[in-house]
Length: 183
Image (cartoon, rainbow, N blue to C red):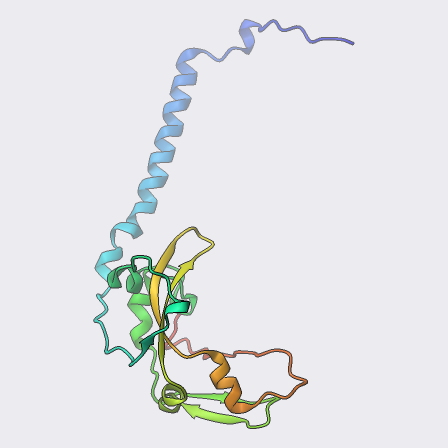
């Protein structure tokens, strides 16, 4: 077995002045990169419009499907979220969501069902009694929110159309309109 000579020769040692200068250069590079990234962060409030609370759907709290954790503030829940149809930045949904026109709006349920149907938004809202559930949503990016959700179970809608026994999946196809959703 052979060993390398552990002696460090003077030619292998970086002079102190050069090492310190290199460290300062790396610090400056990191600070400059951070400062560049701050530009869009600092202007985010200039573009985000406060979302006015809308009239709530009539819904009764469904306790078994709710958490008792403190809910995320309305401002945070409506101004910092992912919805890539409106853009890649967290503030984009708050800026662009008002472009989405929900009337006239229809949902078609077809395929392997006994009773295919097309429902407008008002018929969808009246299909079953609304309930409120309070969920903790956790994102793979590391953030989470505790927010109320109003609606009804998907099973109410599926029971209406009576899926065939051979049906295995439900496929959702959504609107793709760059004028309303520029993401």
